[in-house]
Length: 475
Ligand SMILES: *Cc1c(COP(=O)(O)O)cnc(C)c1O
Image (cartoon, rainbow, N blue to C red; front, side, top):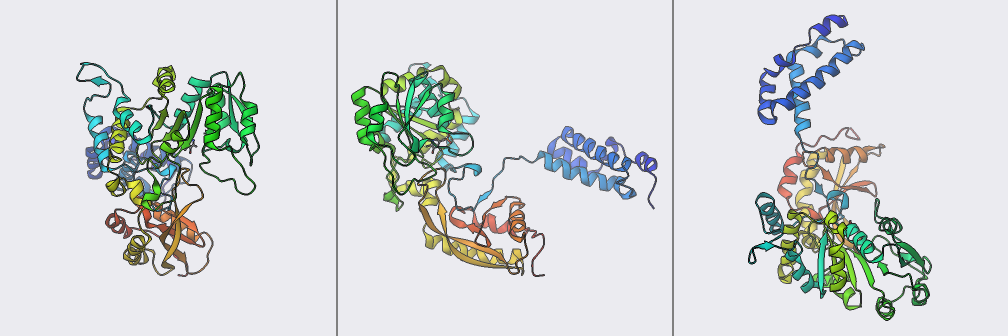
């Protein structure tokens, strides 16, 4: 029997009484009393409003057991971290939104050790004096790239900002019109120039820039010439760019530093591992660049960081900039970066040890075999309304490495048997709702799970039983 609102309102149990129930005593044990009290107040407020507004008229809504269950669910949701693991089955190995490179075990352990205890972050034990934060990575970066000096900051955007702000504040920086890039979100070269207080001097045209264009642009006010790697696009057709070597020689002749923002910055020759060639940092320095900037969590396969390598005098000036302090990396990043770079000393084993390289070099055959192994479990979990098959597909490196190159891979393709609108979207949502969300992609009329980056096949399969496919088409 529906009661009138005031009777319902007065039968709402007190927070204290609810907290004394078994499910909420248990929730308080796990998450602390304060969190459960907050969840209880929220839920009771909602119920009161619904009753007062005439939306809720059912006496069951105020039963203590029902309320306690609702509060327990709320407390659980509020205690759950929003930053949590997912399965990246998008086929994009370095997915910026999914955290880019997964760290090697060695890097994870080093970061954890640095996190939990005092360390030699800026302490020289031998001299019992203050040390240099960059010392943990500088020698290894120099060895790998041939640079004279190196420093690390928060990310590559910070690296570019710091280089420009140190070497070119208030002065001109010629950049080709074909390289005024936007790298996702808020990193747009013209805006970074403005933020660093530089005057962008556009050179050439969108498709063609010649050495002569730079020759004409370099003058009294030129602080630095900048070349930006075409990270996420390619200009094709009637194109020309100033050869890097010639541009470097021109800069040297005019006494102007030549900086290259490489973006991804490979440290190894990727063709050794069967991948397409990506210009390495060493090659760029050998071609005459005075400064090269690149990311730590792209092809390098380490933590988020920006690396600046090159001429000793320029790196020293950059390290003295007060902005460096604002952009420096923390101890966990430094530990993870040093441990990642250490893996590069053994190129024979790095393709197994560094997850980014391990995923990029995984053979199509191995991925196909994994698809065959897992497809039956996927078929069982999605039900009769969907066709499940293994399909060739293309993976991407992502994060602006080799933007147009893709790697042959295999995917489990799940397609609705009857073409009802929205079924694929709902299917993707149900995979994303699993305890460890599964992120795939919708393409060619199917929901694709590219298994290139799947390592924990057991964990993946185990949670499939809980898949709740909203509405099964064809039923
Ligand atoms: C990715 C990229 C950046 C930004 O690097 P973050 O490490 O994400 O800050 C800058 N320049 C180029 C050319 C890039 O590819």
